[in-house]
Image (cartoon, rainbow, N blue to C red; front, side, top):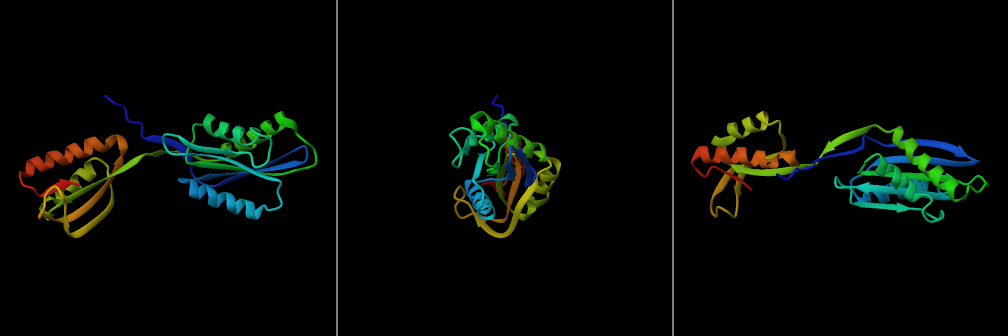
Length: 217
C-alpha cells in the first residue's frame, strides 16, 4: 500500500533578525511563500528598501515535495551566501520559505570561510526566531448532487472532519451524465491522504440511494 505524505514544515509569518560581524552588518528576513512570483516581489521590495546595501543574497524552497528551489549569491563569491542559506533551510526540513540576507560591508573582508559562516548564521538565526508550523497538502473534491442528498453529504462532511471550500446552487451538468442536471455543487477540501476514503464514503452513499442523484466530478 502506497504511503501518501501530505504534511510539510514551513513558517507562520515574516521574521527579521540581524547581527554584526567584523563591522559588516547582516540583516536577515524569512518569509512564508508559495510561488516564485512571491519570491520576486519580496526580493524586489528588499532591494528597493536597502538600495545602499552591498549585497542581497537569498535562497528559497517551494512545494511539499521540496523540489523547487534556488540559491543566489548576488555578487558574493560563488557558494558563500546562497548555499549556506539553503543549507539551513534543508537542515530544518522547511519549505514554502524564502530567506534573504542583506549585507552592509564594513570594510573588513571576511574571506570565504568567514562569509559562509556569516550567511549560515544569518539564516540559522532568522529560522530560530520563526514560528515553525506543520501544514497539510490538501485536495478539492467536487460533488454534484440533488437536494434530497444534501443532509447525507453534510453528515459525511461532519463525520470525517472535512471542510467546505465552496457551495453553489443552481443547475449543474456533467459530461458523464449528458442531459442530467444537479441542484448543488459542493467543493469538499480534505488532506491528500484522505481523498480515497472520502471518495469511497460518497460512493457508498450513491449506491445506497440507488438513483443517479449524485456524482463525484
